[in-house]
Length: 624
Image (cartoon, rainbow, N blue to C red; front, side):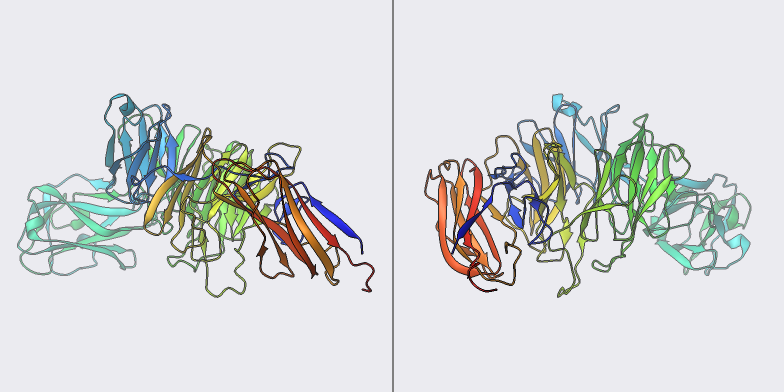
């Protein structure tokens, strides 16, 4: 019998999507391993450390860097945080409503804008406060404002007990923007009864009702009736008409101001519309493009050229600069060459029952509508990001890249194939979950899922330089160590200079992890080979031993070899001794398929592994 070695000494092929075949120099699985820095070596990546202590009390979903180098972050519950350059985190305030997964900075006015669920908040003197100014979170900086109005109230209309669908008993409006949140009517003289405002569409379907008691009314003034939920309307260029009724079901009547006596169609009124739609997906991603601040706003792209610090008029803040097909909502924004790329999804209100449908629209910033679009039949295009003029996104559990022609599927994400699953599973990625670090594209995946097999982490794709192929791997995990937990969330992945930040939630705990040059290596790392069968899965071979070579181990570092035969369970050997340069594991067993690997434990320094050798006998003297 002749024993022959298999020597594995290149690792830059990354994780393969199959556990037996893959790109040259690929492997089955790794975690926390750096296989790109030097293709003939494996080292351990710097670990994630929770930097935010107990300051962060919500899921951080976006971060920005100010000119001074300070960072500002926002969580989904409206919490606003800042990080000083010494690494100290503080909580600066909380907006009155939940935020919508983004914030954006305007350098000219030193203002941060934070999209909420329906309005836009701001932080004035954002960077100036670090030199002694006051950092102020302004709730509802851009609240609902007037769309339609009439200002004459020289006559009156008297409310009736019941709705009457005739011309003089209805106030007809044609909205130009949406969604409608409230209506103001001039109350001349209030009665003793409650006053009810009812909104109908053209078919007299009820879209909303609001009741105010007599005690809540003020004579000789505009009084506001605010709907409990914003009312969606069809607006220009093909706007629909809607109408309002005002009644008093009991008590005495109220008179409201009009320009024609007894004619409610001439009422003095103002309709108010929210700055943002309340979306099903909860997202209002934002980005700078050309001279504009752009915000994804449901089925619209809202555009604002920020000139002054004042809340803009409807002629400045264009809620519906672009309109997308019905049923779609913006879920991501990125700049691609000279275009703004706008990812849109169809989202069910029930998680796990999603539409397998998405689109990415491209707009040059001047055309009246989007210039062209890319269909995404695999599902919602999540985590949209542009690197080297290539658009990256997740859809249907896979990582895609597009730069013209057909999208390229980079990788089916590990454990995301739901065939033969025991439950209906779903995955969602938030808008700010991709970033670039050391030239490598990083992606937090997934932001959320109900799967208990998909590993949450920051995956990577790329190559250190053009001499090597781009490869895929699981590079970073959260500092809590949790990987597969139904309550895990990755809110954002951001890189500023030499510092990587990850916003996360683990059960009821929240935090921001950091990776920086002074970081120590991950305390554990894993590497596992592809399945080896010498091209003969039908014959038995015999493995004698495996040994792993490395430079002298740092203090406190160990390497434990392991193997797996015929897709069974892993069998581990003895951990290496301190300062060793090689560890061996005697096996002396027959196999048809073999996997080898090792587990690393680190303290303050990373090992450098440069060779894995498998001594095996093909048993060629035996008959097939």
